[in-house]
View (cartoon, rainbow, N blue to C red):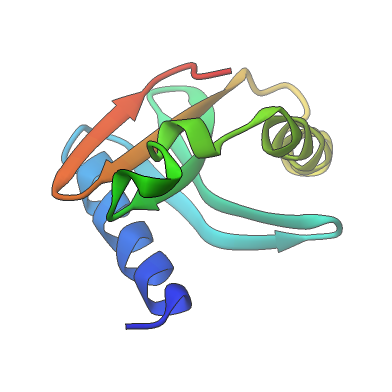
Length: 111
């Protein structure tokens, strides 16, 4: 399986994981100028930008550790642009779904 295929599979797993927790998925792989947002969801009235990270082996660290300062900064910028245009009054937050091997973890309000 290629890394792109693994990424798509991870995003599908994360989407199902979030839906089971009551999230409503609005967008998947949203491409905006400057990058991509894995999932845009609603958790109740809150707009949630979700980063999905998958690690099958610990050799490169955990999935959560892959969401570094640079990645967080980029996601904040992308999300602000999206919210300004489509939901200027929305309250929003950033969650991370970390997939480590067979284990999935939701990190609400991760940054």
